Length: 253
Image (cartoon, rainbow, N blue to C red):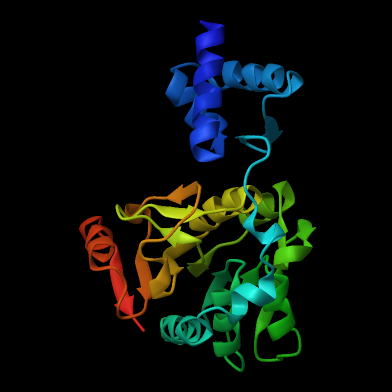
C-alpha cells in the first residue's frame, strides 16, 4: 500500500503544485502521521520538498522570477485602480483589514491613505505606501522576504496570521478558472493566501477583468469560499455566473 499511496501523493503534487498534509491524508484515506512519514521518505528520495503543513512539487512555477512587480503593476493599471477604489468603499472607518500581496492590493492601500483604519499585511509594497501615513495603524506580518514580488512568506507569516483577525481580507490572484476556482502561480504564496482566508469575517477577491477566466497552476480556493469578488465590467460572463452560483457576491468597479 505504501508505494501506491506515495504515487497518489506525487500525482496530487504534480497536478496542484502543492498540497497540505490534511488534503493528502484524505486523498489516501490514512492518518496525517502516515502522510508525514511518506513525505519525509519522498523528500529523502528527492521527489518533493516539505513545507510547513504539507509539501510542494519540485521545480514548480514561479512567474515572479521572470516578471517582476513593477512590470505587473504597470499592466492594466487603470482597471486595477478601479477595482481597488471599489474595494475601498467596502471598508468603514475603524475597520481592521488584511491585505494580500500584489499590485491591486497595493493600489487599495493607496485608496485607504488618510483613513482611520488598521491595515495588516505581508506586502512590502503596502508598507511603502502607508509607512508615513499617521491616520493608518499599520501592522506588518513577519516572514521570509521575497524580493521579486515585495512580499513576506513562509511559516512565520502563516503563524502570524493565526494571531490576527480582521473585518475584511482582500486577496489577489493570478486568475479565476471558468468554474470559479481561484488560481495562483507561485507556490510559496499559496499557503499564505489560504491562511488569509481564515483571518477575517469577509473574504474579498480583487481581480481585474482580464483574469476572468485566467491562468494559473496552483489552486487557492473555490469560488464558494469567497464572500465577494470585485472586478471590472467586461469580465467573462460564464465565469461570473459560476461565482454567483457558488454563492459569491460579484461587484463591478
